[in-house]
Picture 1 (spheres, rainbow, N blue to C red):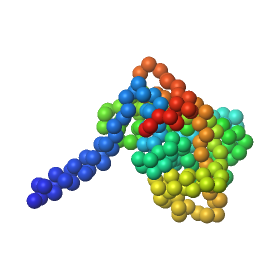
Picture 2 (picture 1 turned 180 degrees about the vertical axis):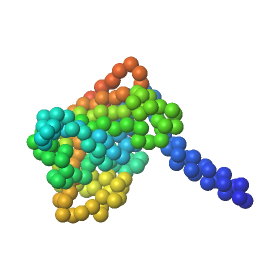
Picture 3 (picture 1 turned 60 degrees about the horizontal axis):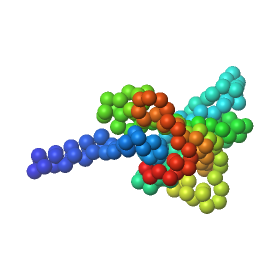
Length: 193
């Protein structure tokens, strides 16, 4: 009895630990990009700073993202933002930004012995702009973010939070040795994660 319970427990723990990630083949570049964006819960977003002493220089900051509930991603990264946030202030002057997401935030790379900088630990860089969502898209963004980041529901209301999406203009994929590969937004959205 104890041995059977231990076996069940270990199976559950190992399944969680190994993240049960089945990574697409690196030849399927658009699919890899969609896969990584869907698997990741946060991204590093780089803006052009509007604040001294780094005004005009790249400025990177971590943001929670979601492209939809687990297993049902749309490919569009949504964010929950406030104008009090320093990077959002940058975006008010210049909405252009880049998002970097990596499988290093899952157990996949560590379990395979891949360094976070290794191309085998797939990472995606999205270029584009951040725009506040309107109307019915607010419901989509809210469902996507609050499903993966339930704590957000309790963040202070006096911060005037709003939902935004990353409007993708280019996708850069580093998932294997030999250099970066690019994917158009059209190819990206056509791919199934």
